[in-house]
Image (cartoon, rainbow, N blue to C red; front, side, top):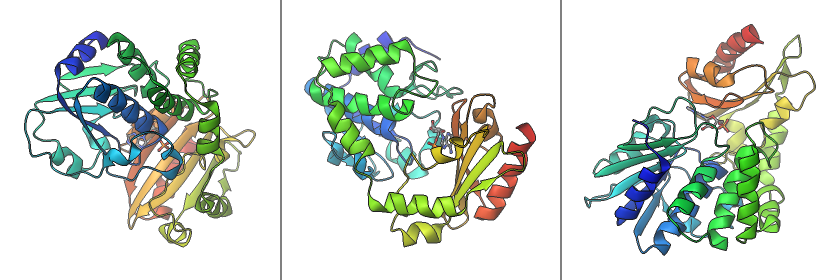
Length: 321
Ligand code: AMP
């Protein structure tokens, strides 16, 4: 069942012990939303833990309390609430995380992905929100928590990363208004730019070099793709590193409708990223392969080799382009 944001606010205010969790291979929105909400709940005197199955990428290390985000470990005590952020369903996290949270007395689900399975005891899903951070901002206003500079920096990072610096089509006037409010509350444009876009680890540029070496284009020029093998990720010392920007190079090419990145993340396991220029709904394509996401940005995980996964996906994508 879907709830009002006011219901979520009152539940959060009642809970004393909360564990926040986000999806695998966390992005700026997932991390920014988690850290911003954690800062706010801690300011209210609550016990707050944060859990992610993958490490926090170094570009987010300027955000407060990122070191408090821990790898999954079973929460043995009872009586805590699990707050899921930016997850369309519980399969967006590994089994280890689901088991770690099995003792939760309450599950709260806050998200902006279409097709969210409403798996929580309380659910708030707004598919019009450009970022989960946008929802967290509204939530904190309802809870009457003052937005400190720390909270503002976290939520601003979420907004920037999920809107592609306020340029993706999910950007609305409300997104910009919230961005403006966050700046008034002390979010730093300098910090965001320097850390999110101008502090790329060398390994990200090396990964881009490998990815560009495997740039492919369909005969009609409507589908572009890049591949990254596990070997290349190991050579670049970037096995657990998932830059959000590399895939965008595919969609930058004039005439391309759908851009794809095939990334071998473990032997026999391939993560596929989908980006659409506008006409093609890539979320529904990703769902055909067990994934999900948004109309213009989606993803899926496939079993098999890089070549097999690419062949399967490309056949289908070329069909609809
Ligand atoms: P990415 O290509 O990883 O940046 O993902 C783009 C969008 O698709 C994000 O909103 C993700 O939450 C979503 N997404 C990525 N991978 C998956 C997956 N395996 N299942 C469902 N949604 C996904």
